Length: 166
Image 1 (cartoon, rainbow, N blue to C red):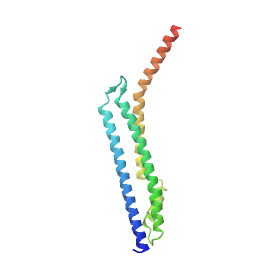
Image 2 (tube, rainbow, N blue to C red):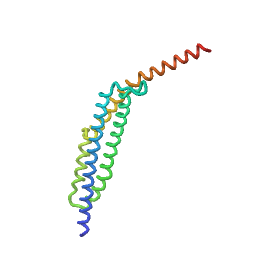
Image 3 (spheres, rainbow, N blue to C red):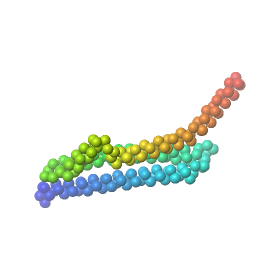
Image 4 (tube, rainbow, N blue to C red):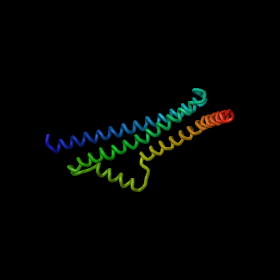
């Protein structure tokens, strides 16, 4: 096998790895989307369940939902970084040895497209993660507010008892 054939085989292997990596990215996004939907349904169907006197299932699921949304955001970000830097740069370096540079041209085209301020798929994923996190946060606040109000009320009543007792 001559040098050019070896470079081409490495290039081919690396582009296949990139495609597999992108497939894993889509599967990961599917996992987060399905998980968030499952959490929403769990919130709906366990809304009246209460643990330890005041802790509701809705409160627990809102915390889990916020966590999943944050993890999804970080995952989208890390996959994008790895795809852009690791794979794009390596493939572009290998393509310097070829007369045709399809991935380099594709990457330039994507960058030009992004400069037109158009939402990319990853931006939409991040937007869904943020909207989900905001929803779960709103549910969390609505569920935790009565608990905090009860605690403050008990503290104030205890302070009143202590003050009257002195």
